[in-house]
Length: 175
View 1: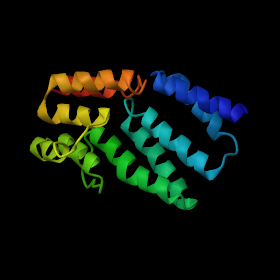
View 2: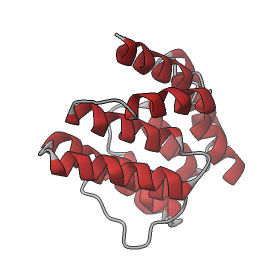
View 3: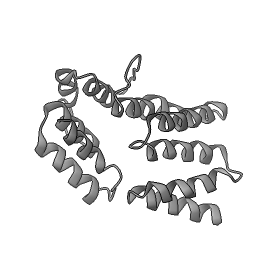
């Protein structure tokens, strides 16, 4: 029960944008015996929790999550981390050298980081509906402040996610 309680506190503090408190509970979780899937998930979430503060730490946590997924044959988690999380972190930090992914959305995100805005727009405009992430990427690619502000609003009001609501704000600063 204590581990589950710490997981809930981690999720709460992470999503309410209190990364210091979130990390405190994440490290308590990692210092206990966990199932392979939980080990993978907690390192994955720690990687994302470190997104805004430090590229190296964020990427190290993502690699730990990927290695755990590979070690324990968690194919779904390995694919998510390799094709979504690692390219996402790299694109956010503009560290895209030799980074590829089969995922079109993260390919668009990598294109934005490389200032290939027309490529990103071409990928994103073919989608019927956008998630807040996709709307954020389209706003960044097209330099559309309204799309970025709407993505921010959607993160908060549709997903209740204060942490990722900062993503469009960071892209607004880059315009």
